[in-house]
Length: 317
Image 1 (cartoon, rainbow, N blue to C red):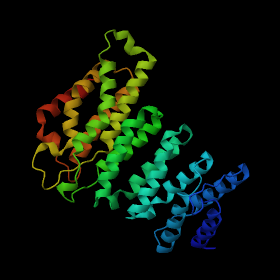
Image 2: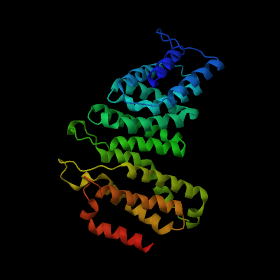
Image 3: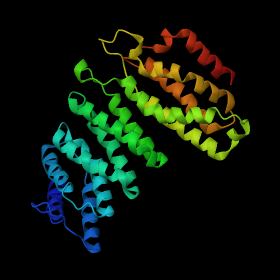
Image 4: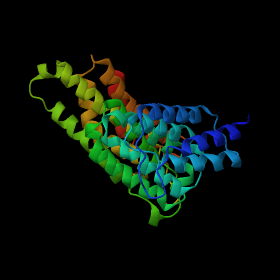
């Protein structure tokens, strides 16, 4: 059987588990939950392809997923894995993308679904970002996920928070040269992403008793904060557009200078903590790499005095 035929067969099987046209929700027995989960697993295991016939049947399956019962975590986890794996075929289909995004976001409020929910969001942003970049949908999605991050990140596990942070940053970093009217203030958005972590850094780094800086809880909190800051800088490869005339076009470079007092303090006082030092130095590495990449503004070359201060400290460590 061809993969297309397999997907069509699985879609017919999945239809039995969808809600009715009257909006009623099917209540599934444990046996039926396992059957539905198995169908979704088979769909996830089917190779994805950009061929039109694949796209048609996968769009049908995506629509069916949005009609599945939301009462069963096993079904929802399996459905989110299908979305994460096959979402590349959406390619510009904004209505379906919005429906799936709503379905996936619903999982953030439940601990048992958070990892699959965030991973699906991340894959959707990575795989769909190019087709979003030329429409206002990109801006709307970015604003939505930014609000979600501000409201939900405190309840997420560390790894899940990093994935959600990456998803938002990937959207911010898209090539949005489609006109000023549709563009976000990227600097302001990144400030919002970093606000929580900057507050944590301020609270941790102003501890009066130096002995407290050696406590495991203190180091773990600082490591997570720097890991999140580093994640933002890693994925924020914002390049200067032709209509950007000032140095603020390099968002990451300007943010590095703003964060430098905290980073400098960490480099001077936590040199014995390998993980914290690694994440802190990576922030500098990401800015240097992104600034000097193709299309970058080579911000370090324009800020030579500050660049020398940074490099001198790194050399002296």
